[in-house]
Image 1 (tube, one colour):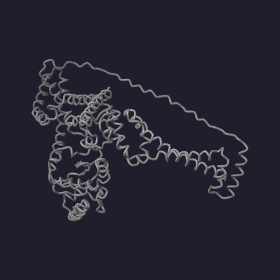
Image 2 (cartoon, helix red, strand yellow):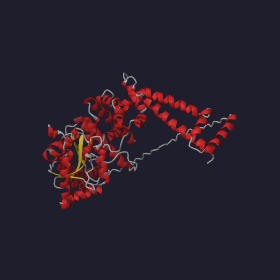
Image 3 (spheres, chains in turn purple, cyan):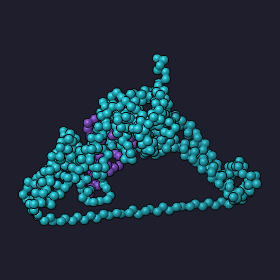
Image 4 (cartoon, helix red, strand yellow):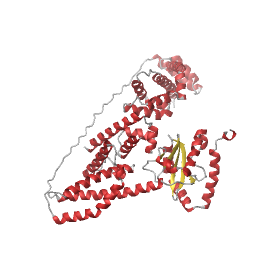
Length: 66
Length: 466
C-alpha cells in the first residue's frame, strides 16, 4: 500500500520535473551539479525510485526556482 | 596429449580466434549501419540506438554519458529537447565512431576474408585441414600421425548433433495477504490527565512556534503542488512508522540527504499536528488518547526540528565564510591528487580562477549555481565543489576559515574523483586537517613548497609572450 503510494508520488514528481526540464531546457549536467551528484547518478535515480525522497523533492524545488 | 587431441585443440583455438574477429567486424558494420539510419523519425532512430546500447558501449565506452542522456529523455518522452540532439551529435562526431563510419567497406572486406578462412577450417574441407596441420606448431611426427588419422576418418562420414532442451522456469507467484484490525477506542475523559498534557504543551508551545517561524520561509509562497508533495511525503513516512515494517519503502526525514527538504517535510507535518492538537484540546468531546497521541507526535517532531536546526545553522555558518588560507591535500610523497598537465590551457585558466575566488568572492560565489555540496552517504567529511565553466575544484572546510583542496577535475569526473579520495584517503585528510589546525611547522613548509610548484603548474605557457 505504502509502496504504491510512493510509486505514484515518484511518478507525479518525475513527470513534473520532466515538464520543467523540457520547458526551461535545463542541462542535466548543470542540474546534477546543483544537486551535488553526477549526471549518471541523477539519471539512475530517475529510472528507478530510490528510498531517499528528498532527492526528488529537492530536484523539483530547484527546477521550479531555476 | 595425443597428437589428434592437440590438433583438435589448435583447430578449435584458430576457429575461435577467427570467429571473434568476425564477430567484431560484424558488430562494427551493424553499429555503423544503425548510426547511418535516417534521422527523420528521431524516436525510431534513438530507439534503435538504445536497443543496441550494450554493443555500442562495448565498442565506444567513452559515449556512456551521451547514451545515458538519450535513455533518460527517451524514457521520459522528451526527445524534442536540445540536449538530445547534442548527445546524438556527440556520438556521431566522436573520433572513433567517425573512424568506424568511414571504414565500413574495409570492415566488409575483412568479414568476407574471415568468413572464407572459417569456411576453409570447416571440418568438410580436408585440404584446409591438411594445410592447417602442416603449418601448425607441432612436431613432424605429430603432423604425420594426425594426417594419417585424418585420412582414415575422412573415409567415414558421420556427424552428430546435440540439441539442448531449454527448460522454461515456471514463474514464481508471491502472494501477500494483509489483514487489518481495528480496535474500538474507549471514550476516556480524565480531566487531570488532560490538564497535564495542556500544561506540558503550553510550556513548549513558544519554542515550537519559534522554530516554525525560523523555517517558515521553506514553505511560504511556494508552489502548491510542491507543498502537497511534501505533505504526501510526511504522511507516507508516518504510515510507514505506524506499520513498524523493517523493509523500508522510504527513508525517514532524519536520513534524508537534503536537509532543507527534511525541514520542509517536518514543518508541514508539525503545522498539521499542531492544528489538530489545538482543535482537540478545545473540543469537549475529544478523546484523551487522541490528544495524547497528537501531543507526543508534536513533541517528537519538535525534537527532530531541533537536531535539524543545528545541522542547517552550522552548514549556513560555514558557507558564509571567506578564506585566504588554502591548503592542498598531498600524499606521503608530497604529490597532489590531480595532474595539471592533463588539462588544457583554458582549463588551467579556470582552475586558477577557482583558486583566486576562495579569497575574493567566495560568499557571493556560493549563493549561485557554481557551488554545490557533494552528496554521498559514505563520506566522513562535507565536500564542497566550486565550478568555473566545466572545471571544478573540490574542497573541505577546515577550522578558522581555511580550505583544504582535494582535487581539480572536469565536471563529469569531479564527483567520482572526490568521493574516491575522501573514501580511500580519509586518514590522510584527517591528518592534514590536524596539521592545519596545529600549524605544524614541517607541514606548513611542505605546503609552502608545493604552493610554489602549483603556481608553475597552473601557469599557462605562451601567455607571457603576448
